[in-house]
Length: 87
Image (tube, rainbow, N blue to C red; front, top):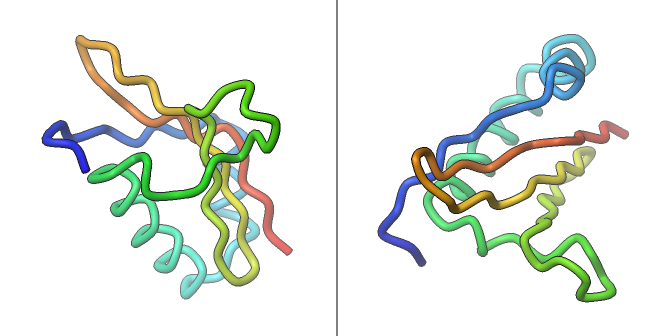
């Protein structure tokens, strides 16, 4: 775990998908997962299975897959959510 809090930032496309294609229960489930990732960004498994970039992580929930990149550099360490898949 890290002592550093990460801010979650979402691409415009990801935000639009969350708002329009996800049910309220799914949004709450994703919110909890994003909170976990913000506290401990390494807690979710690596999305790049070929070990090319271990900063790309994948949240896998029932019906939802979200990909984010850990960007630890100041001034504001953050997680960039670049894709969400709803199935």
